[in-house]
Image (cartoon, rainbow, N blue to C red; front, top):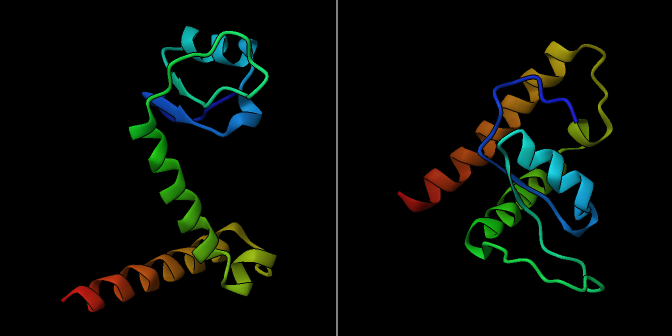
Amino acid sequence: MEIPIAAPKALLADKGYHGDRFRESLLIRGILPIIPPRSNRKVLEHLDYRRYRDRNRVERCFGKLKQQRRIATRYDRTILSFESFLNLAATRLWLRSFVNTA
């Protein structure tokens, strides 16, 4: 798995990515895998559920962004226009949460 940016400290993923080779390749690169074990795993590994909760927050953010039809279907032809609208949608979500708390 090629990561074009600086290596992260940890990788949050769901049970689908729980495999020994995948976990070993992350550990070799110095990335801590935070992946819950599958139910059929014989030797259960410790999972930091505090960090794993952040994955839910990220998934909910993607779900809210995909409610914008233009983002979900990717109508934009260029990367620049898609990323620009993505920034506008994220700003709209941020402003909504900021205005309601103030």
